[in-house]
Each structure stands twice: as C-alpha cells, then as structure tokens.
Amino acid sequence: MVSFRSSLSRKACAIALLALYLAGAPATASAQPRASEPALKAAIIVNMLMFVDWPQYPGLISNQLRICYLDSSPVAEALNEANGKSIRNKTVQVQKKSIDTLRSCNAIYLSSADQPLLPEVLALVRDQPVLLVSDSPAYLQQGTMLNLDVAAGRIVFDFDLRAARQAKLQVSSKALRLARRIIE
Image 1 (cartoon, rainbow, N blue to C red):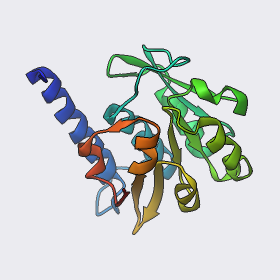
Image 2 (cartoon, rainbow, N blue to C red):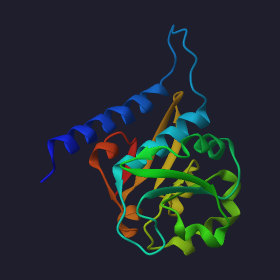
Image 3 (cartoon, rainbow, N blue to C red):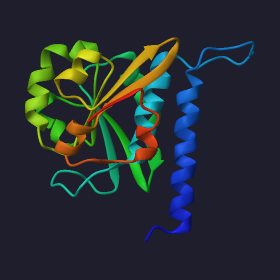
C-alpha cells in the first residue's frame, strides 16, 4: 500500500515536471528570462528520473542515479548542473563515459554527435535497465526511449514504452501523460 506521504511526494513531483514542461511554452509579455533549450531539456531528463523505477541489476549502485553521456554537447553540459542532487533518496551522478562503461548507467543521453555510435550503444544495453534519452527523432525509431524535441517553440517529448518495457523499466503514467506521443 502506498503511504499518504509517498503519494503526496509523487504528486509534488508530477507538478514539478508539469511546470518544467510548461516552462518551455512561448514567452508572453513576461520580463523574466527564459531558460535555454539545453537547460530545459536537461531539466526534463533529470525530472523524468523521478518517474522511472529500475529493477535490481548488477553494476547499478542502489543509492545513485547515474546519468551518462558520450560526447560533450550543450544538453550534456546542462545535465552537469544536476550532479549531486537527490532524487527519491538517490544521489544524481552525471558522468561522461566511454562506450564500454555505459552498463553502469541508469540513463544515457545521446546527442546528435553520437549518431555513429548509436548501433553499438543499442547493442550494448539491449535488455539492460537503462533509460536511453535523445533529442533526435531518428534515434527514437531505432530504439531510444525518451526523445526530446521542439515544437511550436516548446520542448516536448515522445516516449517509446515498448523499449522501456523491454529494458524492464517501469514508467509512471503521470509522466507519460505529458508526452506528445507514446509508442506502445
């Protein structure tokens, strides 16, 4: 049974994710500066981790959430801002990794510069509990799970639930409700 406090915490997380999602909406007559596109994408990636449950798996450290990337990019640099933060009693670790060490990651961000390595990454983590994130629609068609995009001046995301289930990841329906498109 889910405790009231846990339920309240999940609701607060859903509201935070919704706020970040809406933050990408076109600016009106507001004087406040908007966050950059890479910062918004990084925030969505980090907040999505609140809504994913990973199975126990050798190589994953139970008190950490590791977000990894291969090549530096504006989004990868923005992800570094989350280093050391706490999500669901786990410490976020953002790390640049080599391809042979990716299995120790909970989530991997793949930039457009990683395109030549995509088949190798997909083969390496196939059936492993790793959330694959990209910002290229072509990557989503090839096996990543969460794809970030810009539509009508807003950051939106598509989610491949089939790929997540194959990786034995449980994704909250609260987060999926915010997706532009869900592939089942």
